[in-house]
Structure formats: structure tokens, C-alpha cells
Image (cartoon, rainbow over all chains, first blue to last red; front, side, top):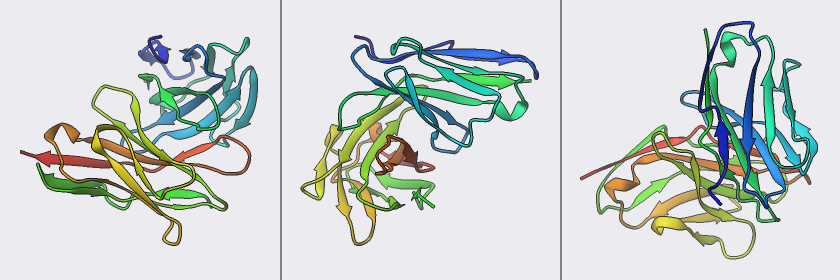
Length: 113
Length: 114
């Protein structure tokens, strides 16, 4: 097992375009999290899944953001009609069990021009 | 409001000296507390956690942290700093409301000088 992977690692897009990011968690992990991190800040919680169920969404997750985890394995995060304020590092993490240690992927860095 | 505070943006320490990175939290109930480290161009890595039991928790790379319920603090410590410890450190708390939302502090950059 190679850990949590995220694709793409970098994405440059123009304002108004849609983007989709993918996260592949550690295979036996049932929980998957999405965070956004901007320069000089800690990760901000966006949403999390337990298996395929999306159990919580942050108020940061506007209507333009949607996340799925259709089969309880990989997850996608889509941002529609991107804005310059969406520029950030998007982090994915996964975990298993009650101890709740989260294992993070390398992140996808988004730049909206 | 539930929050995590890391009052120092940066901590400077000489190699071989003890280091402390501070963290305080404000949540109701009994939180799970975590420290993560972020090296340049790498993802966040788990260092240690407190769930219950002994207030002094030992983790990776010689780090430890002490949970203090009365002061709502969870400071990260190491007896003897290494230059390779230089990185960005994040304190995090899992909100104990039955869900798994985790709140992170803003981070503290640690510089260890040779």
C-alpha cells in the first residue's frame, strides 16, 4: 500500500471553468476527508465520508462544490464555475477505526486565473 | 465557537536545546487531540495523539505532548531538537459531537539552528 494518492497534483484553470480532483485513500480505510489549505493557514475541513455516505459538510462548501464517493473507495471533489478565491491546496485524508489518525495525501494545488 | 489556537507563528531553537510548540483548544466535551507535521512539498504526517489515559503522550521522532485539561492545552515538546525537525507543525482537535470533523490550528513554523 502506497498511502493516499491525489490527482492531479497541480491544476491551473481559468475563472468560470469546472475542475475535478480525485483522491484514492488507503484501501482498508472507511473514512475519507477533504480539506482546503491556503498559504499560512491550517487545513480547513470541507467534508467527510464514511464509506459512500457523506456525513458532514462545512459551510465553506458552497453550492459550487460537490464531493462524491460512489463505491466507498475513491472520491472526487468538483468545483463548478471556479473563482480566484478557490485557489488553494486541496487535501484528502483517510482513516479507519476509533483512533481517528488521518493519513494525508500530497494534495492538489489549484490556481484559478 | 470551537477552535484551536497556536499562539506562535514561529519558534526558533538551537539544535540540542529543548523545544515547545504551544496549542490550546476550545471545544465542549472531551476532544481527541493530534499533532501533525508538514515538511516542504510533502503531505501532513501524523506525529501523536491523545484520546484518553496518561496525559503525557509519546509519538514519532522523539516528540511528546502533554494534555492539560484544566488549561485546555496540548503542547508539543522534544527534549533535544534536531535541525531536521525544522518544519510546519499543526495541532488538531476532533470535535466530540459524534461526528469526525477535525479542526486544525493555523500552524507553527519551527526553525532549528545548527
